Length: 384
Image (tube, one colour):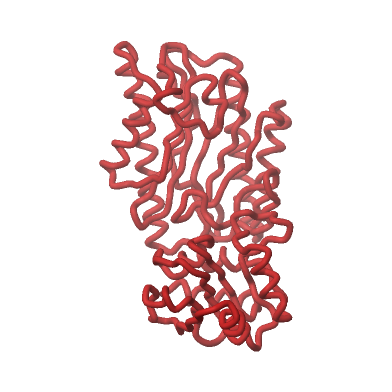
């Protein structure tokens, strides 16, 4: 289990005694990321990864047979008293441990431990710290195979979105709606051996002003000449890393001056964020997620659309589309994790108005020399 080894190396890096992961009925996705598989589990599970020594798994005896013993010591418990006693013994000698806890609930992607379990661990006299930086170091830096998978997914998405706009062009006279384009994209993803949990977003006119609109049988609008169209699609190879992009276009006409102005503000914010990341890397520093969000958000505010940008600037990419690493966020949360080499993430500013919305989303991989854009980049509004 190479991720367990990476976790121990990260513990050395952050000078923590142990990483204690708690799960109840798959409540903590990070535990299963470390184990590399999702196993049948009906009771409480604790995985303790010490800075030195072998990782230990504390599981109920009815579930123990489902867990692999390779690279792990497995300890079983039966009742609540034995659970507390063995958990205390497992942490003997520790003073500072990391758990999926975020002070004030600031980072919900790292807030998987309930208050009662946190109280239990602290009752042993331990200092519990957030595992946010530790989890990012152990789980979110892509290896060569993962990066190659991400690049393939991002490249395929760029080809599919162009083909989706082309389909609108060819089907316009015969009739096509949002759901029809969504089904076309889903089919193309399957042909490319890519998988996604939901989506895509195919949004016409006012629907494009809803950042997470998804067409259904009841809501799907026809796509007609003169319409504005936004397409957001995300997918990955089965065991790979997600790509995630968003493009916009006009159907059968040139964009209006208002649409051009909003698009210019969005891509200006996107490109300003990329330039900030590149400049930071050249000076030998890697910014925190909230700092990059501020750059894009300030650009849109100066353009006069600050109140219409209602989500973070970008999110981590991993084996789940909204990954466990640093987000570009000083708006919904204050993400102080640094965008260090090895991380993949989106940059996706958006402006959402009552009659239309614009989002431009690209994928970025952070190298030691600066940001590498791994997806196709929209520079002009697509005129269909």
